[in-house]
Image (cartoon, rainbow, N blue to C red; front, side):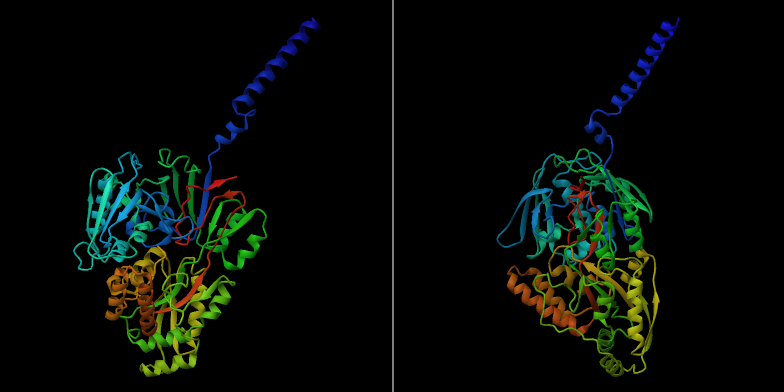
Length: 534
């Protein structure tokens, strides 16, 4: 009897062990590969604010482009960390000798995320959509191509399909930065079928050809994109999912990284750079500098319509103190509207020195010896060129008070801030620009030419002589001659003082130590297709 009981007990033990082993085997316990493959690779990217829209052609803000850069693709691409021109959806192109015709050969067999075909007709449909826009539709298209189809300055004469995979652009005049313009994030090619289906809601339901597909948008919280399993580039993307989380405060975002809540943090305070470098669990990234932070003065609003007042404000602000206090040696004082890394930068311009006495003299010359009251708009979100808009505004407020100008600091939610400033409602507003294509045209013409008033020229500054020079520079193919023209343009802008250029920064990001293949781009729009975890 005891023998039988022992035999039964042994049998029970064997059955239990068999069950446990089978369970382990089914979980991949004896195969490391199968265990790894079952875990999705998810990157949580912490950033300073929410996107405005996910229709790349309809926005101007960097937070929108951070996402759309990975959903949409352009005809040509920038280099991994520069603005050299490389193949994209177009595998090759040929410009005519006179610079008026560009013929693109497209990649074949590519599908949009909705399963429709990418082809020449899709490219034509996108450019037709943009060209037939109006003032508030596609700001970047208007800025980069001289307005819309019916505007006198519109550069593009026609875009036509010649067969399924050949697109021909004909220009009315040569445009030196034409290819660089096409590589910019706003000109990602979208599914014509999806645009027709979604109408003006396309920005909520984006459909491109990129390595990631749109999944979900929780306003002011997160945007989720997932791997495009049918992506046309082999073995990409490496990640299964990316979640963009909006965490407005830079310090809170870094805390979230330290707590393991996110994997990558944009907008690290310069003061925190050293602590990140000293943390073995983290790594610090420097974005190649190609930006400017500035205080814009709306030139159509009294008393900012007087050049002496604008010059006075330039002299009243201690820019070096701002750079020293908020950038921890990771920025330089700005004197021009574009950074020194851009071809055509005029280093001979001295800039406005900090001189409160001179500021008072200029105010008196403008008929305002006792100063005046104004509103000073402070940015509500940290940006690469402005890590703490509120605190910088407080320094500017104090500087202005010392010359008799009483500045009340106001702010708005980010999208509202941009819209109201674009509409010319601000006396003075803090803003900045990260270059889109590495060309002087993208700073001077886009931000300060009269063609772009109401789009990217928020100051409503207009100067006919400047306009003629900038259009000539656009059309000039000789780089030396272009640079001479841009040097002249900066002299005019300096004298008219529609801005107070503040700083050119080296933006910082921080990520987990096991994050690989992340290459911050100088444009601020990062491609995440190659990003992976060790």
